[in-house]
Length: 266
Image (tube, rainbow, N blue to C red; front, side, top):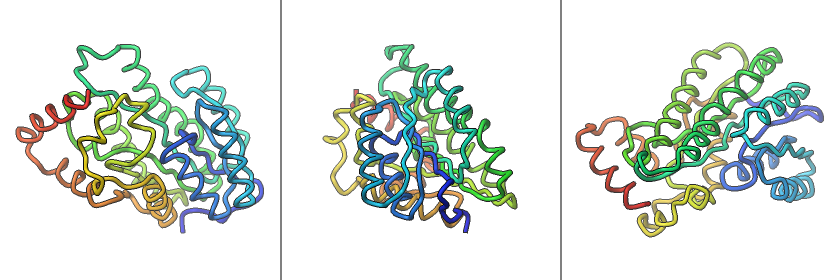
């Protein structure tokens, strides 16, 4: 089993913990008795979650407010986390933009790369050595089925998740025998605040209800997979179909379909 048993001093770090999959991951780990460090921009949401988890599961839930798009804040976060006995890293924070890259706000696109790519890499490089030194632990990286294919009108997000997917699966192989495992969570449509943060109000009108999975279901599948040391977790039938299609559908077919689909989400 890759996930160590909880101890009073050990912590699992969850980024993007204020809502959605991140909040559900925190709940799933807390249900198993693990104390947590919750990371996100919205301190009030983190404190509400921390209080709920502490009351419901009798665990410690520490709050670390941080804007992961800010390099200085990331550096300080890594410095603070370096003093903690970390048994798990859940690198989950992220958001998307939709539309032509010629029309999207350049600063927002850069912020997306900072959160989805640079922050993941910075935190991993900063904290993974200590995790390996302790000889046990899990890394869980939230990628996406979108990372399997080019996605016109969703280009920066798809590219960022291609990075997350490849990094995670590469580390799964690289860490073999170290006592630490790396698992990729590659979800498809999940009902969260992600659509709101990503300015994706039309998506609910485009996808039928059966196409979605809940954040709780995605998180529980991810935690089970990470606990078992799995390489990749793809929750839900729709995500599995996207995962397969993104890998094996010819790009000449896929590109025009996705260009129209993501263009309609603007």
